[in-house]
Length: 119
Length: 107
Image 1 (spheres, one colour):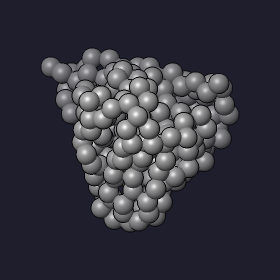
Image 2 (image 1 turned 180 degrees about the horizontal axis):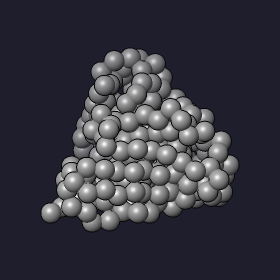
Image 3 (image 1 turned 90 degrees about the horizontal axis):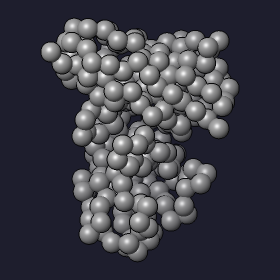
Image 4 (image 1 turned 120 degrees about the vertical axis):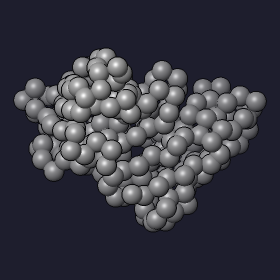
């Protein structure tokens, strides 16, 4: 069974940093592209970033480019999202998700981890 | 960026009704469109990819159609479990984008 377990969300002040993790199991992690999608409280889904199976060629939403970095450690079956210069607009539940065949849609999702940016 | 516009934003319907949600792209995305269902407090669930391909386990009452810039998700006969929020997503060009969502609630 595919499992994605998101962690690392926390309460942080504006300007702060946070690193999210997503532990994968139940599938060959190194064979799949992965991504992050976020959802602000009461709002819709926003695609954030994705990365291919070998860990290069990342892509980012304009809203996070230059502040967030996606990475992965295939030896640990773990996806990361390093977030810097956080603003209140980054407050959201962050979901990691598996991309099927590198095509760009997400066929499996984690439960999400909540990031709250507030002073 | 490609803008995805869903309509309606909310839809009230009854069990047994046939409903259709529309998703319009600001430019052609060929057929590279997915639909997700999300229930309160839960992660989204993939229903359909490549416009019309149902994921394994998704009830056959769900169907998708369209091409280019106009797409739709149809639920043939609403079941109690279908009341949720639905999102479309284009994966034709980066940055990938979602529609704003359609909340389907019980009339």
